[in-house]
Image 1 (cartoon, rainbow, N blue to C red):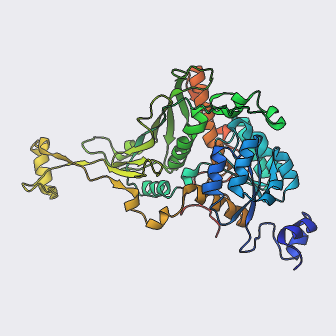
Image 2 (image 1 turned 180 degrees about the horizontal axis):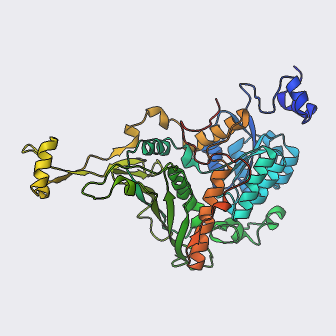
Length: 483
């Protein structure tokens, strides 16, 4: 055994469980200093972001190979992954060659949205764990096939909804569970930009034979985000980030979506919408994370039984490519306060915020609140409520409520570290295949609502299975994270 590595031993022993157990080895046991060998499929802009801030910074990952159909992107990936001449033999135009020739534990898929399904299925069939960028797939059937394949192979697919690994968003989930927001009935989210989303085509650019199998021309290859053949545009590239967070916070899927969208500004041959608005309805009952029981509503004659019946949360999501003024953020509004959720970055350093809803108080002459219940009662029955003043506490950045160590690593690094940890030690990631399925369903149903002009019912049978599936609503401190 001393002459064999863990990997070579497993190859020698084959797949017979009894042999592995008898020898004291498990396919998921790793030496303390052994890294997960990962192959990257797709070395474009997001793939390089992973190499720089995710894969490249995760101490338990070794990038062992890179595949891309573009020669220039492959060279870019080589430089970011290694830059050594010896690594050039681990570069591939065809990911299938990489799967056949490389000794990999896992694969990271960062390719155009509508190519995900086939690549992910091939990787699972090859016995690899998969990290797949969002959105997982473009039809309900394809998403369900991925979930089923995970069940059959015993592998998992972690989907790139990195906000679930953002400590500030996890702080919001924990605080929401305490009732800090009160009852949430309305959420507003948006992602607005100013630009045509086009990228220039390099001079004398030629498609490789592998690229020609997938893309009709260089325009479609380089600007795939604005063509329906490969993407759903704003919907699949931006909206699903927020919709996934909302599913997570509510602890359930929406039941219905209304939508309107069109190509209203960039009329340049694209066929994905540049201007859209959607309303999602969530039905909350006591069993859902987002449900908040309340004892009374001030100045209301409702009894507690009526107040705490199942209720709806309505989500308004908008996106456009003609004005960046509203930017990218979410406002989760409750009757006690609101969470403003946004990504911490150099252009938006304040990150997430708590905003107090405020409350009406009678004030003493010195401006302090009158808290004596009898005096408040006497003033109320005297009809003097007009004397009340709205008192709103200062907004609080989440960073002031959290330990400074929470900001030591980017979310991309954390999600990749956890991906590798689950490959090494078992369990299911927070953004597992069910999380990916549900966010994709939001995307698919929203597109149908916009195209048809009709409300679309989101059916439970789209995300229910006759076998056990992983929990899609885990969060930090309330999940199945391995030691």
